[in-house]
Image 1 (cartoon, rainbow, N blue to C red):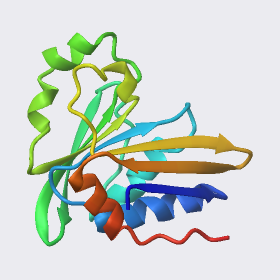
Image 2 (image 1 turned 60 degrees about the vertical axis):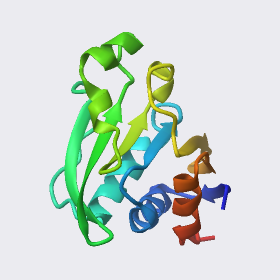
Image 3 (image 1 turned 120 degrees about the vertical axis):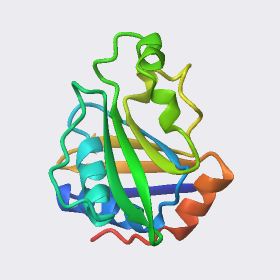
Length: 161
């Protein structure tokens, strides 16, 4: 599947989508999350991390810019790095922090506000856009690489209608 679009009626739908994505992940993925404040980027990531086995608190890395989590994907331990670049002053700040080392075939990188560093970030495997529509959310995912296509092919999600 190259493209995925759905409408989520409430926050529980966002959590269900995060849970479904956790089952479709593979090491090496880079996922960009686009959307306004309050669109559900962190809620999606929190549900994904909990479904992948992280038992602790998942905080938004608004001030730290990146939070790593150890989870299990496909029976193997994987590090998921959750980036929130909202407060990034410049793309160079991303490079100076040494964050590019996280982008490899053994980890999964999820980036909120990628447009803040897009010219220095590795290209995404999946681009996800979350839009606020009334009380719900419209979600549009686009696979941009073979690995992204495979992830969306593994995705099993049926929103509550």
